[in-house]
Length: 432
Ligand SMILES: Cc1cc2nc3c(=O)[nH]c(=O)nc-3n(C[C@H](O)[C@H](O)[C@H](O)COP(=O)(O)OP(=O)(O)OC[C@H]3O[C@@H](n4cnc5c(N)ncnc54)[C@H](O)[C@@H]3O)c2cc1C
Image (tube, rainbow, N blue to C red; front, top):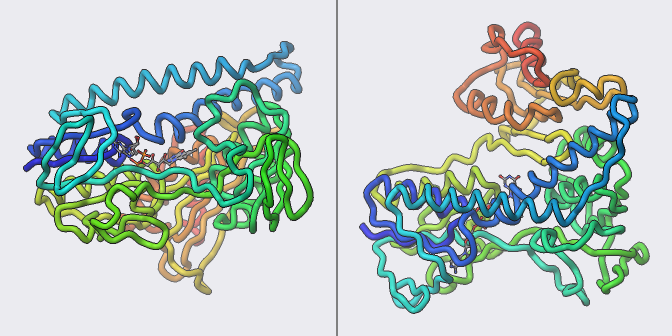
């Protein structure tokens, strides 16, 4: 079976490796760089900045506590050069890993014509085609929008902008606000509606107060025009660089007219990642589901299995999510409606690795668990702590596999740990 995959990001690469291991003859086509948005512009770039920012924040705290005396400065061009060098190195490893499974990798921009994929003038026939072309920033139709930047430009900036106006109210706006305010920019977030409207209000408040101190957040504001010097808005002018974090739009044009496309330009798929065309599958950001790397990878694997006649379905329940800030903000939600029997327990973070030196100022994070007192099911967990990004996915798996609060009575943790989830679960196993 010949399978052609367009897009070498997390979805396409995972699919290529899975299909090759299932003995398909796989060609993976990538137009820019293997690793996609995640490696070169998204997750790993934010991670690279955030590691520097955390060091910077820690060192300011140690200076305040009299532990270290030296002041330091950050060389932005070295940060961006280093990030590009590291992501380039990882891309080579990913290339090698993909090819080792037997998949053929072709660099070039793919187009589709009469049942054939064309790249660099060569034709690639297929039995099954997977579209994994990802998404790009949504650019709102505002006059002067060409003067604005997006996450695609930050590694090309020459310096830390003195003033940064981030238009948006979601995760990307939040993460870049955290990074640049810590690097020294005066940051404003301009939200069309409410800031982080999908997040538990207690956590939104914690983020605003403790993780984005100094960031000015303006809600219900419309950007009317963008200029090289700033922008005019419904609440007055703002000065400085304008950064758009106004959502993502799927790169689905490549199959226009060949498969059903939804109202947000997403490729419509079923739970087997099949499109309305029997030989075409789609996975990752281009199908417009969750918009994160682990989901894109899983969708790629599910698409590959079905293309290779191994039946598999995508399960979107209890997807763990995380926002990268000084402490990661992580959460899962069972999607079950709040009921009268839902009971919340909450606790401040503990002093431990990554938070010990914040015990004095009380900035150790915050964790909350909601459970159903009638059924003992864990319905929602949100946690701000150094450990939350690691512990939440395991909890998601356990909850999905049917673990209830009482099952955590014999849970043994490592110590010291900043994972506050187990403390709340111990409490709930006894009294919940
Ligand atoms: C700023 C930012 C931060 C993020 N942080 C996180 C995070 O911390 N954690 C997380 O899980 N997710 C994060 N994400 C989301 C994550 O990056 C995406 O969900 C993920 O990359 C989607 O994978 P994908 O394979 O669907 O698409 P992509 O990674 O976008 O890959 C698509 C690939 O297709 C290629 N392509 C497109 N058209 C063609 C064509 N015609 N021919 C050949 N190749 C083509 C592109 O060059 C690209 O390499 C972040 C995203 C952004 C923007």
